[in-house]
Length: 140
Image (cartoon, rainbow, N blue to C red; front, side):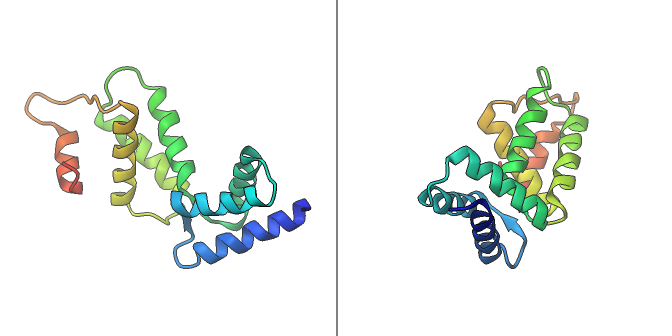
């Protein structure tokens, strides 16, 4: 299959799945990548092509947010402060292109932090901002 045909197929599949919200979650991404693999494309090539098509067409890709959060948290040493968390949230907001709410982005960040083991946070003497935020999000 030629690159133009694969590119067109990606655009069609993306538009079918993300017509309403212009957001590709991990399940939709997996479905699109499976189609590319069935067409004989290597997995890394398919991921790269999908990311390029999403960027060009203005679609937000959830895996790019997860990668962004992981990259930002790996650069931090020790515990994460509320200011550092807010910086990660700001970066995720910019990458989301307005497709996800702050609540959804905070949930995603918390899930990534806890999956990666980076959920050690800096707290004040009498407050725990992280626990309070998790309660507000319904994750505690």
